[in-house]
Length: 344
Image (cartoon, rainbow, N blue to C red):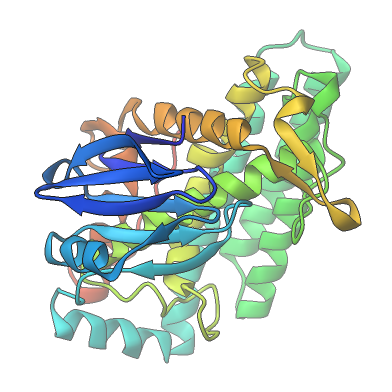
């Protein structure tokens, strides 16, 4: 399939595809033929993956309708994003910027993001270890890794500088990804650890691609909440980097992205044939592989789970938006701390 709609997002994956408007519908053309037509009011986002094009007329209609258009490379790297003019309370954004300039307050928020990420990583390791017999080598390795991640959680909670906090986050992440191959049940899809820019094995290629999808969702969530996705706390400011979106997505990496990749692999929905090797040992998803991963990601996002703070069930796709609103409430001063989303 050259394009498909999932969760009100149009994914255009065909090389050379183009978009055009026909009255109130958006059409995707490949080699001059209409492959899919979608009423504009059915969409809230468009993701253009690879070499696809869109006219200024389409962009104008999308902006007017409040539909974001995101451009990603074939590997899933964010290239550009077109949104409607920023809405929300300017006083909220001013508070966000002031907090970012306060070293102690920035550290407090950043500790929450790291706590959310590492606790969810540990939960995933612990959950997987329950499937094995008590003294199996896999169970012991996962339990050992879980204990070491817990030490990183404690270290992060007591960190007094941003460098110390980032160091503990890095330790916990390395331990987690060092044990990640134990969660992969297909021998042909094992990974030696986390690598990127470029990914050099199929699992890392999938992780990088899903992280790009997740980042796009976090940008949308923060924009909807009236926050600036560029000004973060854990991730320092860099031109073109959505620092706050990267902060927010930390707690969702194990919840949404990592679990998606593991499910796709362990259900044998992808094989080594779904990947393409490039120069320098890089590995990328094939067009068919990308479609499988997109479908798996939105299947995961479509699961209904009880939010740990609100004690109400919601689709996982709504969780970044819930957390963005909680972050906005903290920045306004309505909450004493930002509560990360941690699922057991």
